[in-house]
Length: 264
Image 1 (cartoon, rainbow, N blue to C red):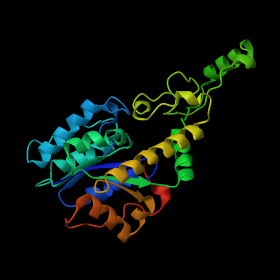
Image 2 (cartoon, rainbow, N blue to C red):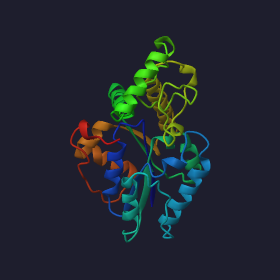
Image 3 (cartoon, rainbow, N blue to C red):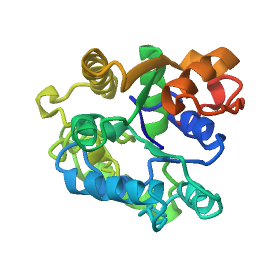
Image 4 (cartoon, rainbow, N blue to C red):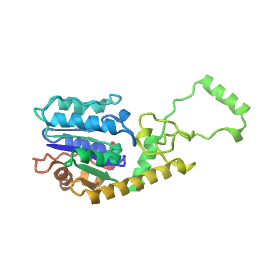
């Protein structure tokens, strides 16, 4: 029986990792099963609840996992969970499990934490694209109101707002569009002040993998970093699966063909 928690900075193939694990016999792996209940800090109770659910399932008990249904894709593994004759591997893949590795290992010392890593510059660029917030075209009435506001309000006092989200900026920084579900799932860098979105992402990337590398040194049997390129080859995918699944019979599947179709 195996329990797996996939890690990664985001924009690095984590959804592809969950698809690879879901292709294995008697295995179920979610991708960000319940971000609404998670947070970078203070979500220990949520983690305990999930671990209890996973352990009950592996033990042959009731198959029940709390899933955030805001995204239809999150319910697909739940459907798979209820159709398998038995479950021998269960897991979830999410950025936000990194702060809870020690907590999980204290309860389940055999848990595995594969961590995907993509080129730093590519991750920054991908995040910037993803966090852009599309605005609907203004109606004629809205355009007129905006024009009047610009006449009545001097440009020198017009607040500068980015048409983007920034998970790391903190609520005090009003330049960014807030995201109630996801902002809490990332660390907050209040000390960066007016620094750009790219600088926030770069700091997060660097600190994330420094933490992962430390865990990999401390728990070499449990935590391992894999380049995203591993997902592009049979040998690479086999390495990931052997780490996650041990001696089980493995099923290879092409989870994506190039970086352009990476989903997360």
